[in-house]
Amino acid sequence: MPERMHLLHHVCNIEVGMRRPIVWILIADAAHARVVKGPRRSDDLHGPPLETVFETGTDHRPLRKIMADRPGRSFASTGARRSAMEYRSDPVRDETRRFAASIVSALQARFERGEFDKLMICAPPRMLNALRETLPEALAAVIRSDVAKDLTKLPELELHKRLEDLSGAPD
Image (cartoon, helix red, strand yellow):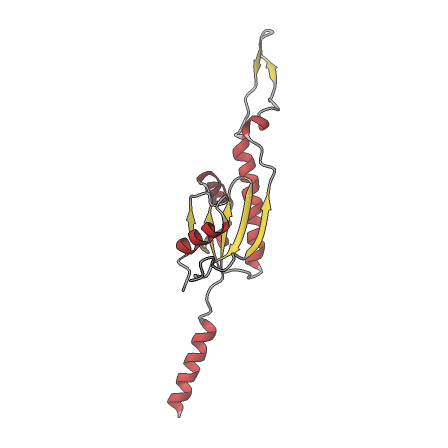
């Protein structure tokens, strides 16, 4: 009888302690971000719909519009010559970093509330780098993988299939 109780206790502990981690996937580009729950594999041709946790976006302006507000001209330190002033930074990169920081802030708050355990990131290289630069250590530690691809414009069915393949979703 004690052996049976020990086995039952062991099985109960495995079930409680072995909960499947909650995986979220961030799909982002420089203007849009969508966080979905990790997909489950499905034999259904259309598969279960991706469950969106949250979406956000920004008014991403192309470089020609950002540069429309030119920094101006200035006088040379000697004489009456004027020359064009240069931007001190890359305005597109700055906008991308600001957007990445807002995404990371939202994710960090939700992670601290225990809403997910692992994170995957799919974003084009520039956005992926901006996200990496702004990730706090605790959030960086739970990243399961990152993929340098823009998946934001994929149709829903194709996106589901790609995310299944990338995440190795259980059957």
